[in-house]
Image (cartoon, rainbow, N blue to C red; front, side, top):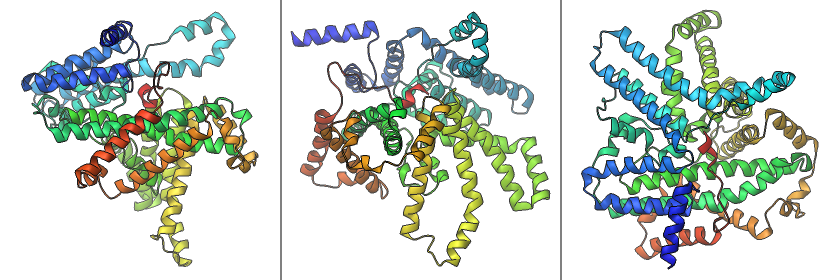
Length: 530
C-alpha cells in the first residue's frame, strides 16, 4: 500500500511538473532508476539511455516547450561542424562565415532570452512617463530555459575547436545532443570541452564498484554542503538582506560573510552532486572549484572559483581579443609611449576590462552582476598588479618576509574581504541597495551583537547556529586536507571499518541535520539561474 501510494505520488509529480530539483526525493528516485538501468542494459545503449533521460528531465522541469531552445542550439552547432568538415581549410572566408553565423545565432538566442530584460529595466524609468507603454515594456519577458548559458558555451566552444582543427567532428546528431543536454551538467555546469570530455558520454562503461561508490560518496558530501550548511545560512542572509535598514553595522558584515559561505557551499555542493553522479556513470567531468577561500590574491581566487568558466573566458574571449588588430595595434602604440613592459601591461588591462565586463554580464542582466562579479574584480586585479612592486619594495626595506606564513595569512584574509564586497553587490536586490548596505555597514558600530545573543534573532535558533558552526568547521578541516590532495583517496587508505564509519557518519549527518522533508522545499541552486 505504501509503495503503491509512493508510485502514485511520483507519477503525480511527473505529470504536474512538481519539484525535480536535484536535492528532491523525486530526483533521487529518478537518478536511482537510471543508475540501475544504466548497468543492466547493453553497454552500447548506455549513451542512448542518458540522452532519453536528459530529454525527460528537461521536459519535467517546468515548461517542456523550453526544450526547443537547447535543441535549436544543438541543431545550429551540428550543422556548423558538418559544414566545417566539408569546407576546405584554404577556403578561409567560408569557414569564417560559418563560425561567425553560428556564434551570432547562439549568442543572439542567449541575449534575447537572458538579457533583453537588462535593457527593459534600464529604460524603465523612461517608460514610467508613458503609463501603458511601461506596461507594454514590462510585458516583454521571456521564460529562460534551464542551463541556457552552460549549454550555449559548451556547444560554442566545441564549434570553435572544430574550426581550428583541435576537436573531432561529431557526425551523429543525437550524440551531440547528449553532449549539449546531459541532464546533470545542464543544471549549473560545469562548462565542458568536447575535445577533453565529450567522447566519454558515448563510450561503454562496465559496472565498477569503486567508481560508483566514489561517485555516491561525493554526492553525499554535496548534499551535506547544500542541505546542512547552505540552506541554513540562506535563512540568516535573507533576514538581513531583506531588511537591511533594520540590521546595520556588524549585522551586514556577518550576513555578507555568511553569504560568501552560502554561495560557496551551494555552488560547490551542486558540483559535487553533479560530478559524483557522473562518476557513478563512469564519466569524469572537470573540477569547478579548488578551495578558493585559501587564495592569496583575487586573480588566484578566480583560478580556483568556477574554474571552467574562467578557462572558457580566457580561451574563447580573452586570448582572441588580444590577437585582434585593435589590441595588437594598441599594444604596439602603448609600448612606444609607456615602455615595453608598461605598454604591454596596460594593453592587457584594457582587454581584461572587456573580459570582466563579459564575465559580469554572463552572471545576469543586472548592473549588480556587472559590478559584483565583473568590473569590481577587474579593478581588484589591476590594483594588485600595479601595487605589487611597490609593496614588495616596502616589505624588503622593512625586512619583512613576503613569503612567510603571517603575510600569507594576511593576503588570504584580504582577498576574502575583497571577494565579500563583490558578493554583497551580487546578493543585493540592486546596486543602490548595495551602496546603502555598505554605508550602513561602516556608519554603525555594534560589534556587541557577536556575543550578546542578537544573532539568534536572525531566523536561526542557538541549536541551528551550532549545527552550522560545526559543519563549517568540518568543511574547513576537509578544505585544509584538500590542499594536500584528494580527501577521498586518503580515506581509501584507511582500514575498511574506519572508511565505513566515515561515510555512514556523513550520510546520517545529512539525514539528521539536513533541511528537507514534507512541506519543505530546498531552494534552487543559486547558479541554476545562470
